[in-house]
Image 1 (tube, rainbow, N blue to C red):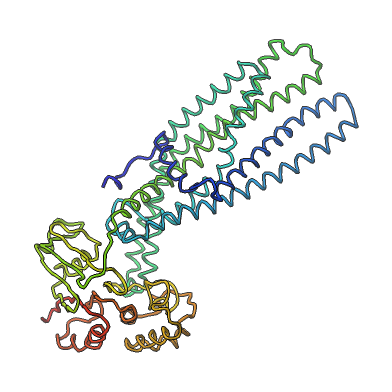
Image 2 (cartoon, rainbow, N blue to C red):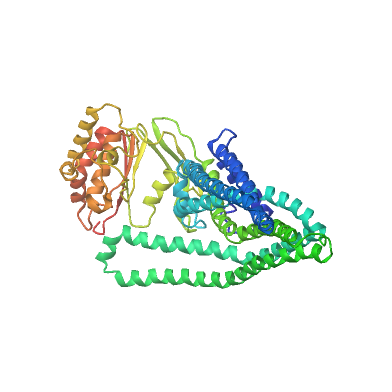
Length: 567
């Protein structure tokens, strides 16, 4: 609960400390490719600033050359200016290119780190089913990571060069305008930063809420897409239209409130930007009206004003960019980062809780086990003592809601026991325990990949012999016609298997998967594809081929049946 408890995101020192945890993932070592690209970006950005400084001095040189009416110097100055502009455009393009490469590299590192822990053990189940405080984990991993890395790559070069540019142009400003100009610009920046932080405060939390509602709205459309046929059987178009529009209105209402608060922020930022241009001339005017430059000719004075104006304006622009970053890019980065930090903390915590199992002739040992649903306080089963060993066949029969499926969740470690203990003494997968879930799960990929799932490669690795085994089990479950419909075991498919197969065919394909993997123990839900009400003898006659095959291929079988109304 402490890991997932909601908190108001803030742009404070704690944010900086927590952000360093993300940086450790993006830059794991000094030899990492991201570090090399980052250092290259630093060199390119410094080169850009050197060129920009020379370009900024060109107007003052034009004033001086034109006042002297020197055609030779004017021609050389034009050629020099064109060369600087070409170099500047090339370096800026290289800056953008390296930033794009950093975005790809950072997204790869951060996403792979999240995937490593998210798919370890049963972490993904806990986040999606049991952790109600974490909304839309899929959006956080897929979209928020992409947006965070994009925003970071966008502001990388500007943040990287800011200390150098501020230091250099502060020195130049002090030389040209004295301590009064230096203090005026820095005071102006401090006042703008304080006002900006005050205006940003209430926006961050609302931006997080908007991202949550965006995820909910997207999930609603995904829900309709996945369950389109079921909704069509209910003729549920009108009610789903109403519910989807309701989510849309909640999202739009939050966006309008966010825009109302952003209005004052934008007013402050734009005012700060334009007042800065006036401040630069005020700073330059101080030494002029003080008589420091009375001995200069009009041409020399124009050149000096142009040079000093560039230095002061560029220093103010450096501070203005930092303010803009905090209001636009950094504001969104905080939102995406806060979203990712919660899921990163939880997946790392759950990763440490994944238990290890060893092979044994016993699958499960239950000692006075009591369990309940995570969302209810009512016990489903109390003081259950049971031992499931090799060669044992067990049938669990009961009415709906009596805890049959829940027992399997407890055995698999998806739910925690309230009292007592449950020990899994064998491994999971081939040569161990395999569960057939109540809802058939088909992944993306070829027919072969469906049969061997969750293995990544054929088992055992035996080439054509493996093809014969798969064809044998497909024929056994009555799905030999799939080969002609699909075109072969390894034919690439671009469709959703749930749209191609009927519910019965999906269940049969899962049985073919069970026979292929040959576990010692198989736990299966049978009520999902048996039509009730039917006589018990009919149920048994339907299941005899499957039960006999499972018995010949596995050493233990525990089945879960829903008690028919007729019994």
